[in-house]
Image (tube, rainbow, N blue to C red):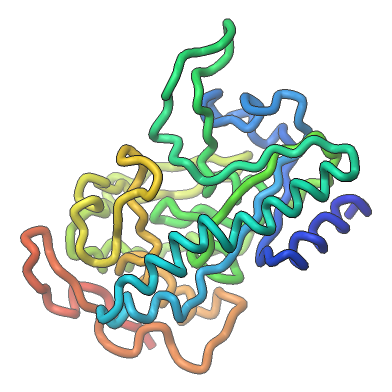
Length: 293
Protein backbone atom coordinates (compact mmCIF):
# COMPACT_ATOMS: atom_id res chain seq x y z
CA UNK A 1 0.00 0.00 0.00
CA UNK A 2 1.32 3.46 -0.87
CA UNK A 3 2.37 5.72 1.98
CA UNK A 4 -0.30 8.30 1.11
CA UNK A 5 -3.03 5.66 1.14
CA UNK A 6 -1.80 4.10 4.38
CA UNK A 7 -1.58 7.48 6.11
CA UNK A 8 -5.05 8.47 4.92
CA UNK A 9 -6.64 5.27 6.21
CA UNK A 10 -4.83 5.54 9.53
CA UNK A 11 -6.04 9.10 9.94
CA UNK A 12 -9.63 8.18 8.99
CA UNK A 13 -9.74 5.47 11.64
CA UNK A 14 -8.24 7.82 14.21
CA UNK A 15 -11.09 10.23 13.42
CA UNK A 16 -13.76 7.59 14.03
CA UNK A 17 -14.13 5.62 10.80
CA UNK A 18 -14.73 1.89 11.29
CA UNK A 19 -14.28 1.03 7.61
CA UNK A 20 -12.21 2.70 4.90
CA UNK A 21 -11.87 1.54 1.31
CA UNK A 22 -10.47 2.97 -1.92
CA UNK A 23 -11.27 2.36 -5.57
CA UNK A 24 -9.67 3.84 -8.69
CA UNK A 25 -12.10 5.87 -10.75
CA UNK A 26 -11.94 3.23 -13.51
CA UNK A 27 -14.06 0.86 -11.41
CA UNK A 28 -17.05 3.13 -11.96
CA UNK A 29 -16.93 3.13 -15.75
CA UNK A 30 -20.12 1.03 -15.92
CA UNK A 31 -22.05 3.34 -13.59
CA UNK A 32 -24.63 5.42 -15.48
CA UNK A 33 -23.61 9.11 -15.76
CA UNK A 34 -26.36 10.18 -13.35
CA UNK A 35 -24.78 7.97 -10.65
CA UNK A 36 -21.11 8.17 -11.58
CA UNK A 37 -18.47 9.80 -9.34
CA UNK A 38 -16.73 10.85 -12.56
CA UNK A 39 -19.72 13.03 -13.45
CA UNK A 40 -19.19 14.98 -10.23
CA UNK A 41 -15.40 15.24 -10.40
CA UNK A 42 -14.11 14.29 -13.89
CA UNK A 43 -10.43 14.85 -12.98
CA UNK A 44 -10.63 12.57 -9.95
CA UNK A 45 -8.39 9.54 -9.63
CA UNK A 46 -9.82 7.81 -6.56
CA UNK A 47 -13.01 7.26 -4.59
CA UNK A 48 -12.90 6.71 -0.83
CA UNK A 49 -15.73 5.10 1.10
CA UNK A 50 -15.95 5.69 4.84
CA UNK A 51 -18.19 3.52 6.99
CA UNK A 52 -19.28 3.76 10.57
CA UNK A 53 -21.02 0.93 12.36
CA UNK A 54 -24.53 0.69 13.68
CA UNK A 55 -23.89 -0.91 17.03
CA UNK A 56 -25.76 -4.17 17.50
CA UNK A 57 -27.28 -2.83 20.70
CA UNK A 58 -28.89 -0.05 18.67
CA UNK A 59 -31.01 -2.77 17.04
CA UNK A 60 -31.97 -4.37 20.35
CA UNK A 61 -35.11 -2.31 20.91
CA UNK A 62 -36.16 -3.03 17.32
CA UNK A 63 -35.49 -6.75 17.71
CA UNK A 64 -37.58 -6.88 20.90
CA UNK A 65 -40.25 -4.56 19.46
CA UNK A 66 -40.13 -2.37 22.55
CA UNK A 67 -38.18 0.77 21.55
CA UNK A 68 -38.19 1.65 17.87
CA UNK A 69 -36.88 5.21 18.37
CA UNK A 70 -33.57 3.89 19.70
CA UNK A 71 -32.64 2.77 16.18
CA UNK A 72 -34.03 5.94 14.62
CA UNK A 73 -31.66 8.09 16.67
CA UNK A 74 -28.41 6.12 16.88
CA UNK A 75 -28.78 3.97 13.76
CA UNK A 76 -30.04 6.60 11.36
CA UNK A 77 -30.42 10.30 12.21
CA UNK A 78 -27.45 10.98 14.48
CA UNK A 79 -25.25 8.44 12.70
CA UNK A 80 -25.86 9.98 9.27
CA UNK A 81 -25.91 13.61 10.34
CA UNK A 82 -23.36 13.77 13.19
CA UNK A 83 -21.17 10.72 13.84
CA UNK A 84 -20.29 9.75 10.25
CA UNK A 85 -19.80 13.26 8.78
CA UNK A 86 -17.00 13.89 11.28
CA UNK A 87 -14.42 11.42 9.87
CA UNK A 88 -15.61 12.26 6.34
CA UNK A 89 -14.98 15.98 6.84
CA UNK A 90 -11.68 15.37 8.63
CA UNK A 91 -10.33 13.17 5.81
CA UNK A 92 -11.52 15.72 3.24
CA UNK A 93 -9.54 18.44 5.04
CA UNK A 94 -6.56 16.12 5.50
CA UNK A 95 -6.35 15.58 1.75
CA UNK A 96 -6.84 19.27 1.03
CA UNK A 97 -4.03 20.20 3.43
CA UNK A 98 -1.76 18.03 1.27
CA UNK A 99 -2.73 19.71 -1.96
CA UNK A 100 -5.40 17.29 -3.19
CA UNK A 101 -8.95 18.30 -3.96
CA UNK A 102 -11.55 16.18 -2.19
CA UNK A 103 -15.33 16.17 -2.66
CA UNK A 104 -17.41 14.71 0.20
CA UNK A 105 -20.87 13.26 -0.45
CA UNK A 106 -23.69 12.25 1.88
CA UNK A 107 -26.05 9.40 0.89
CA UNK A 108 -28.80 11.22 -0.98
CA UNK A 109 -30.86 8.59 -2.85
CA UNK A 110 -30.01 8.25 -6.55
CA UNK A 111 -33.69 7.47 -7.20
CA UNK A 112 -34.41 11.20 -6.71
CA UNK A 113 -32.55 12.09 -9.95
CA UNK A 114 -32.94 14.49 -11.75
CA UNK A 115 -33.65 17.72 -9.88
CA UNK A 116 -32.47 20.24 -12.44
CA UNK A 117 -31.33 20.67 -16.03
CA UNK A 118 -27.91 19.92 -17.61
CA UNK A 119 -25.55 22.89 -17.48
CA UNK A 120 -23.68 21.88 -20.64
CA UNK A 121 -24.03 19.45 -23.54
CA UNK A 122 -23.17 15.89 -22.56
CA UNK A 123 -23.41 16.52 -18.81
CA UNK A 124 -26.03 14.72 -16.71
CA UNK A 125 -28.63 16.84 -14.98
CA UNK A 126 -28.14 17.66 -11.31
CA UNK A 127 -28.09 16.22 -8.81
CA UNK A 128 -25.74 13.32 -9.50
CA UNK A 129 -25.56 10.86 -6.61
CA UNK A 130 -24.00 7.39 -6.67
CA UNK A 131 -25.54 4.33 -5.04
CA UNK A 132 -23.44 4.18 -1.86
CA UNK A 133 -23.90 0.44 -1.35
CA UNK A 134 -22.47 -0.20 -4.81
CA UNK A 135 -19.62 2.24 -4.13
CA UNK A 136 -18.74 0.32 -0.95
CA UNK A 137 -18.55 -2.88 -3.00
CA UNK A 138 -16.38 -1.23 -5.65
CA UNK A 139 -14.06 0.06 -2.92
CA UNK A 140 -13.40 -3.47 -1.66
CA UNK A 141 -14.92 -3.24 1.82
CA UNK A 142 -18.26 -4.94 1.14
CA UNK A 143 -20.19 -7.40 -0.99
CA UNK A 144 -23.68 -6.82 -2.29
CA UNK A 145 -26.14 -8.84 -0.24
CA UNK A 146 -29.23 -10.62 -1.47
CA UNK A 147 -31.38 -7.78 -0.15
CA UNK A 148 -29.52 -5.19 -2.24
CA UNK A 149 -27.68 -3.89 0.82
CA UNK A 150 -23.89 -3.88 1.20
CA UNK A 151 -22.60 -6.49 3.67
CA UNK A 152 -19.21 -6.44 5.39
CA UNK A 153 -17.28 -9.17 7.22
CA UNK A 154 -17.02 -6.85 10.21
CA UNK A 155 -20.67 -5.92 10.74
CA UNK A 156 -22.91 -7.57 8.15
CA UNK A 157 -25.44 -4.88 7.20
CA UNK A 158 -24.75 -2.77 10.29
CA UNK A 159 -23.04 0.29 8.85
CA UNK A 160 -23.73 3.50 6.99
CA UNK A 161 -21.58 5.09 4.33
CA UNK A 162 -20.27 8.40 3.06
CA UNK A 163 -17.81 8.87 0.21
CA UNK A 164 -15.07 11.22 -0.91
CA UNK A 165 -14.05 11.75 -4.54
CA UNK A 166 -10.47 12.98 -4.90
CA UNK A 167 -7.68 13.61 -7.37
CA UNK A 168 -5.21 12.10 -4.91
CA UNK A 169 -3.43 9.07 -6.49
CA UNK A 170 -4.49 6.55 -3.85
CA UNK A 171 -3.95 2.81 -4.15
CA UNK A 172 -7.17 0.89 -4.68
CA UNK A 173 -8.20 -2.04 -2.50
CA UNK A 174 -8.82 -5.46 -3.97
CA UNK A 175 -12.45 -6.44 -4.41
CA UNK A 176 -13.78 -8.33 -1.41
CA UNK A 177 -14.47 -12.06 -1.75
CA UNK A 178 -15.93 -13.18 1.59
CA UNK A 179 -18.93 -15.23 0.44
CA UNK A 180 -21.44 -13.09 2.34
CA UNK A 181 -24.07 -13.35 -0.42
CA UNK A 182 -24.68 -17.09 -0.19
CA UNK A 183 -27.62 -19.37 -0.90
CA UNK A 184 -29.47 -18.40 2.31
CA UNK A 185 -32.82 -16.81 1.55
CA UNK A 186 -34.09 -16.50 5.12
CA UNK A 187 -34.50 -12.75 4.69
CA UNK A 188 -37.26 -13.45 2.16
CA UNK A 189 -38.96 -15.99 4.44
CA UNK A 190 -38.81 -13.51 7.33
CA UNK A 191 -40.68 -10.72 5.53
CA UNK A 192 -44.30 -10.68 6.77
CA UNK A 193 -45.21 -8.34 3.91
CA UNK A 194 -44.21 -10.77 1.16
CA UNK A 195 -42.15 -8.01 -0.41
CA UNK A 196 -39.12 -10.13 -1.32
CA UNK A 197 -39.52 -12.27 -4.44
CA UNK A 198 -36.82 -14.94 -4.80
CA UNK A 199 -38.27 -15.97 -8.16
CA UNK A 200 -37.60 -12.45 -9.52
CA UNK A 201 -33.98 -12.12 -8.51
CA UNK A 202 -31.56 -10.31 -10.79
CA UNK A 203 -27.80 -10.20 -11.23
CA UNK A 204 -26.18 -6.94 -10.22
CA UNK A 205 -22.71 -6.35 -11.70
CA UNK A 206 -20.27 -4.06 -9.90
CA UNK A 207 -16.70 -3.55 -11.12
CA UNK A 208 -16.57 -7.02 -12.66
CA UNK A 209 -18.29 -8.88 -9.80
CA UNK A 210 -21.78 -10.38 -10.14
CA UNK A 211 -24.20 -10.64 -7.22
CA UNK A 212 -27.67 -12.22 -7.02
CA UNK A 213 -30.20 -9.73 -5.64
CA UNK A 214 -33.84 -10.45 -4.85
CA UNK A 215 -36.71 -8.75 -6.56
CA UNK A 216 -38.08 -6.38 -3.91
CA UNK A 217 -41.45 -4.62 -3.97
CA UNK A 218 -40.48 -1.31 -2.38
CA UNK A 219 -44.10 -0.15 -2.39
CA UNK A 220 -44.72 -2.84 0.22
CA UNK A 221 -41.55 -1.91 2.12
CA UNK A 222 -42.90 1.63 2.43
CA UNK A 223 -45.93 0.21 4.27
CA UNK A 224 -43.86 -2.11 6.46
CA UNK A 225 -44.50 -2.04 10.23
CA UNK A 226 -41.63 -4.43 10.97
CA UNK A 227 -38.77 -1.96 11.28
CA UNK A 228 -38.56 -0.39 7.82
CA UNK A 229 -38.98 3.35 7.46
CA UNK A 230 -39.22 6.10 4.89
CA UNK A 231 -36.09 7.32 3.16
CA UNK A 232 -34.83 10.19 5.35
CA UNK A 233 -33.81 12.39 2.39
CA UNK A 234 -36.39 12.00 -0.36
CA UNK A 235 -39.71 10.13 -0.68
CA UNK A 236 -38.67 8.56 -3.99
CA UNK A 237 -35.64 6.93 -2.38
CA UNK A 238 -35.64 3.32 -1.24
CA UNK A 239 -37.06 2.83 2.25
CA UNK A 240 -34.58 2.47 5.08
CA UNK A 241 -34.55 -1.26 5.87
CA UNK A 242 -31.46 -1.65 8.06
CA UNK A 243 -33.60 -2.03 11.17
CA UNK A 244 -36.29 -4.20 9.57
CA UNK A 245 -36.93 -7.86 10.38
CA UNK A 246 -35.54 -8.97 7.00
CA UNK A 247 -32.14 -7.38 7.62
CA UNK A 248 -32.06 -8.41 11.28
CA UNK A 249 -32.68 -11.97 10.13
CA UNK A 250 -29.81 -11.65 7.65
CA UNK A 251 -27.54 -10.49 10.48
CA UNK A 252 -28.69 -13.36 12.68
CA UNK A 253 -27.81 -15.95 10.04
CA UNK A 254 -24.45 -14.37 9.19
CA UNK A 255 -23.53 -14.47 12.86
CA UNK A 256 -24.78 -18.05 13.29
CA UNK A 257 -22.80 -19.22 10.25
CA UNK A 258 -19.58 -17.69 11.60
CA UNK A 259 -19.15 -15.36 8.62
CA UNK A 260 -18.77 -12.20 10.68
CA UNK A 261 -15.55 -11.21 12.41
CA UNK A 262 -17.30 -9.59 15.38
CA UNK A 263 -18.32 -12.03 18.10
CA UNK A 264 -20.78 -11.49 20.94
CA UNK A 265 -21.53 -13.31 24.17
CA UNK A 266 -25.18 -13.80 23.19
CA UNK A 267 -26.92 -14.34 19.83
CA UNK A 268 -28.66 -11.39 18.19
CA UNK A 269 -32.02 -13.19 18.29
CA UNK A 270 -32.85 -14.89 21.58
CA UNK A 271 -36.64 -14.89 21.17
CA UNK A 272 -38.86 -15.54 18.14
CA UNK A 273 -39.19 -12.55 15.82
CA UNK A 274 -42.32 -10.43 15.84
CA UNK A 275 -44.14 -9.17 12.76
CA UNK A 276 -47.22 -7.59 11.18
CA UNK A 277 -48.59 -8.47 7.77
CA UNK A 278 -49.94 -6.13 5.06
CA UNK A 279 -53.22 -5.73 6.91
CA UNK A 280 -51.43 -4.79 10.12
CA UNK A 281 -52.31 -8.07 11.82
CA UNK A 282 -49.77 -9.86 14.00
CA UNK A 283 -48.34 -12.97 12.34
CA UNK A 284 -47.07 -16.18 13.81
CA UNK A 285 -43.42 -15.87 14.88
CA UNK A 286 -42.44 -18.91 12.80
CA UNK A 287 -43.20 -16.95 9.63
CA UNK A 288 -40.80 -14.17 10.63
CA UNK A 289 -37.62 -16.21 10.81
CA UNK A 290 -36.15 -17.96 13.85
CA UNK A 291 -32.61 -18.51 14.94
CA UNK A 292 -31.04 -21.68 13.58
CA UNK A 293 -28.62 -23.81 15.53
